[in-house]
Amino acid sequence: MDAHHPFDPELAAALTMMPEVDITDVHAARAAQAGQLAAAVAGADTTGVDIEETVAPVRPGAPAVPLRLYRPQGVRGPLPAVYGLHGGGFVLGTPDVDHDWNLRLCRELGVVVVGVDYRLAPEHPFPAPLEDCWAGLCRLAGDADALGVLPDRIAVWGDSAGGGLAAALTLLARDRGGPVIRFQQLRSPALDDRLETPSALLFTDTPVWNRRNALLSWEAYLGPGLRGTPGVPPYAAPARAATAAAAGLPPAYISVMEFDPLRDEGVAYARALRAAGVPVRLRLLPGTFHGAWAVEHAAVVREASAEAVAALRAGLGLGADG
View 1 (tube, helix red, strand yellow):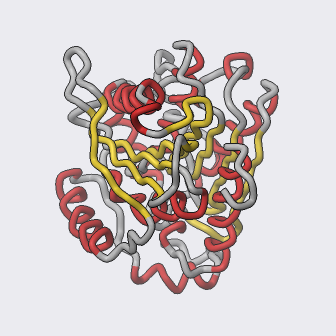
View 2: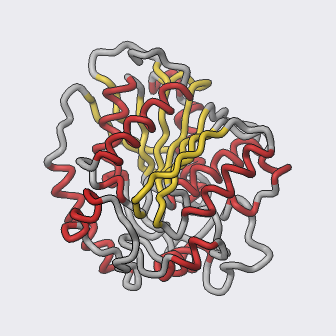
């Protein structure tokens, strides 16, 4: 890590306790993450939330997509829904990554939260992960009565690679004529395979995520030799959507970390949405690095998390009490 990055003091102190992310060996990285997540999920407080495992139906040539539903106990539906896409550089992760966050959203907002267990690259490159996310969204909206969901009040949120998938999903839903997505929340989104922004070139040694991991991630997601080439579609890398192509997308809340290779592509995407007439709120978190959300006790993270919850509340048209 470059000691010259002026990280927030609480975040800097936590770095020694944070595991290094190295996706050079994807299978080893998955095994290490699985152990960490198992312990975290086992210790999670699920008070007030019912959790159900279900699937989106089988599609031709593809397996059913596992979904995890979080529902407030004792609350009569139908309810608005938050559809969550986990991060992990397109190669790691399950809904367990966001288990605590999904529990919090369910409790504080009083909504149904759905985490999708999409297939991972490199075994399943684009468009498989995005199509899995699409299948889950279609199940959520198409089976709204059975699931106790209001199909016209669905928000999507995603972190890192999940943020990129969430952005792509809004493009796909618009172009395929629905389901309607009311609001999108993108946290440190991975949007641009070209990796030519100033932050992508500068942050080669930052914690959790750096230029090397970003290169490996896009190579896995797009397939060998395709990263940065002219034919990569916006559905794979939403930063490639021209301003005119961003018209008609749902209002957005985008947050980026100051010392993150992905920072500038998130800022640029917010500007492109705004130029297309899409209401956008952009938040840059000072002194932070990619994945700093995990340091929940840090004041900058507590404040940002509360703001993110409030943004979803407003985006879904919820009152102050949910």
